[in-house]
Image (cartoon, rainbow, N blue to C red):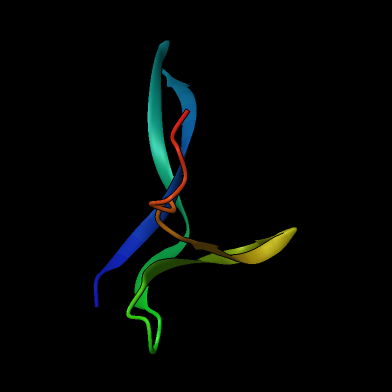
Length: 66
């Protein structure tokens, strides 16, 4: 199983120069739905921010794109 690290960019200044560091906030996993074989992703956050899990699906192929 492939695991992706979820991060947020944090900007800061060091010696007068703006830099960016990436802080881990969770992990994302690829999943397959039983029966249909449909792929989806689960994002598990390391700490709660209103919710502690998001599930993402690929765009629906029968919807028109704007």
